[in-house]
Image (cartoon, rainbow, N blue to C red; front, side, top):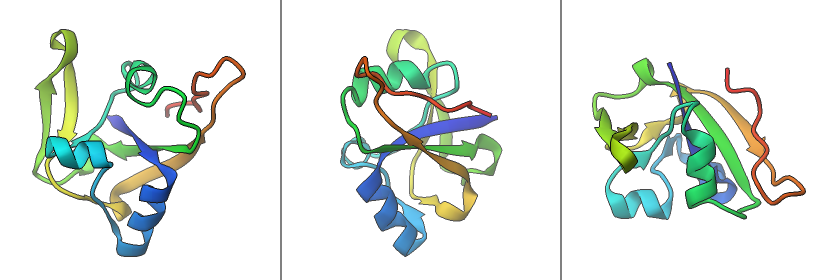
Length: 112
C-alpha cells in the first residue's frame, strides 16, 4: 500500500544529499514523520500545508518502511501511518510536484 508525505522542497533536496529524510521541522518536533493514505492526504494538505507553494508529494510502499513504522489513531479515530526515524530515500517510489491551483488548494497527481 502506498503512503504519502508532504515535504517542503528544500528539506527534500537536503535529504537527497544525505540519502535520508528526517522529516519536516514539524515532524521532528512530534518525534515521527507523518504520512497519509490516498484517502486522507488531501485533507492533510488542506489542514497542515494550506497555501504552501513549494511542496513535493513523496510516495512510499508501507511494507518497505523500516521497523519503526506504525499505524496510529489520530483525528477522529482514523489510523495514520507514522515513521519513527529517518526515511532512507532509496525506499521512495516516486516524488511529484504539488502545485497550488487557482483556488489556492494543492493539485494532486494520480496517487498510484
